[in-house]
Image 1 (cartoon, rainbow, N blue to C red):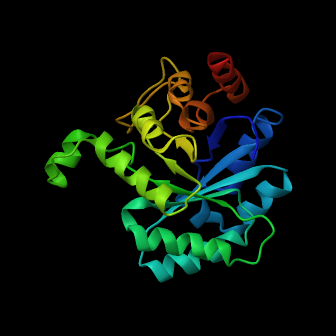
Image 2: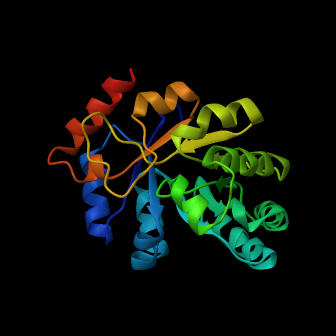
Length: 233
């Protein structure tokens, strides 16, 4: 992987928009997130195009199924030579171990990093308390899922910046931490609940920050990206 902590989320509908963003950010960004919408729209073609532009891919499909299905899916995704793939830690111990096994059995010289998604950044405490009927806090749940990810030999976790400090304290420096829900100063929150600025997330102990709309919706995407780099020093 690379030292640049910024992952730009290609939350667009088609390859034309995605390529335009990558080309506009040439020389500034190395790692791009491909989510469910873009992958379903363009399939492996978008992965091949991004790789042909000498960029790395964070494939964010958040796999969640029975262990054997996830194992087979991870094996297939590993062959696509992406840098990172995600799965839901709520799938449990057997599913997470099966995912690791699937990547290990894939015939590839460049196995991807497996990242466990803890609690989505669109969730807040009321969702946990009212809809899941849990008395635990979001932080407690996120920490427990991060510990589970470590026990199951995942390479990293995805969590809100709000939980990074507690998770780092619980798991140490063994796993990567990727934080979505990042909003530079003065930006709209949109549908996110637990947000932080880029600097706040990195200072708390995150390795990577995922930023989408504040960059891809900006009139001047290069300027918006350079402003983020300036903010994080």
